[in-house]
Length: 143
Length: 143
DNA sequence: AATAAAATATGATAAAAATCATATTCAAGA
DNA sequence: TCTTGAATATGATTTTTATCATATTTTATT
Image (cartoon, rainbow over all chains, first blue to last red; front, side):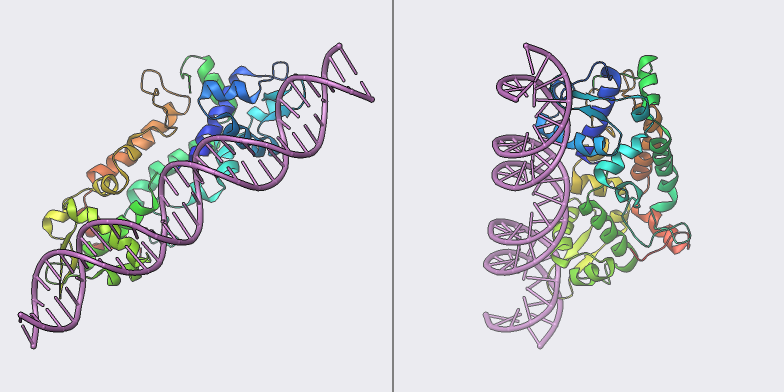
């Protein structure tokens, strides 16, 4: 459902949301260790996120990555879409092109509801919402 | 969530359940075309399923694959487990080892319920159940 | 017994995903 | 303006997954 890369990206974004700010930028090497993802790998994943405005960055000395208010208003799904592309989440569980509500495949009926729940959730939950949950003590790191 | 291989395997099993029997065995080449999976590939996938008793087979002239009553009593999850291994479905959406009900990751709370639904479904639905749905006209092929 | 038709076993190749390495660009501070 | 510290861009390597090919074994049929 989610690629490894997407999972890593989500972890990195969440980590930044919780631990960085414009005043306190965090360098890749200081992201990679706590989220347990190779530095070069996460560095590469961050690029398209910066380009899409989900993460902010600054080069040079005292540079690094962080999230501002705007960045935090992106959904979790938007992260996945940037990294994995749109269709990964949208295709049916069995990847059947011809499967739809009128002519559902045998797995469709039972699974599509719970699947839709997951997708809705990823779409409607913003980064800031997850941050709030952690701050309220209802969810936890480390990632 | 499901590998390509698992999806193919499920398609093949379903196809056999609907179109083959001990009296009317079906050869790989006659499976591969309708389910739209390369012959050599599906042939390989069928082997472990035969070994695990999810599919029946016979060699030689008039040989082929089919499902008997016993075979049909396996769950969809059992197919996935044979092809992808047990842990693929079991690991958390984010693949976080430390994530659990006591210390859920930020995505856990909202997602675990719908996820559990899907898994339960795959576990409790037997091949014969899907066959019945198709026969009743509530679900459709082609796959 | 010999033949032919099928699955089975094994391994080779190709494609995609994940990981690693390095050169380039930009910005801050001296 | 020079140096240094950081992201950024690009590409190479490795690993995994998917796909293809072929030789072997089994069994029904003649």
